[in-house]
Image (cartoon, rainbow, N blue to C red; front, side):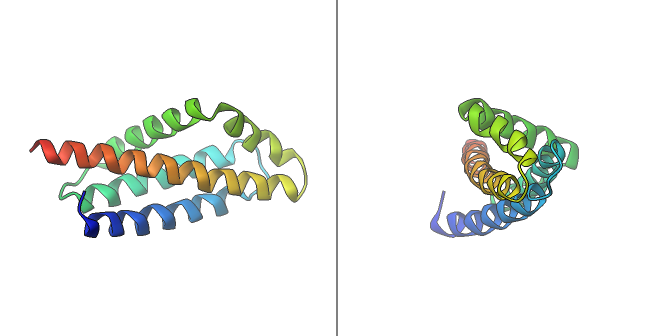
Length: 122
């Protein structure tokens, strides 16, 4: 991955992670997962463009779900705590948003590395 690609990926990943965090601040359990998947799908399409390709929305959703699944399996306590924490007024929403930002940052970089490896093959 070139420095230019890293810079573009950083802006895309960070921007989408903040958007997902905002979606996770809503104190409704389960809504955060939907916000994460939608944001990750959008991020996947933007990241693929950085590496000179484009992917359809349905493929982006599958890629997003796979990346979130890998991240959740690495951090199961955070994933469960994020949704359960929303039951605690104010603090729970802040916690869920913070965890979501961290998880999406990690999943986004995982996705960027995967897209870079695939682009390097061709």
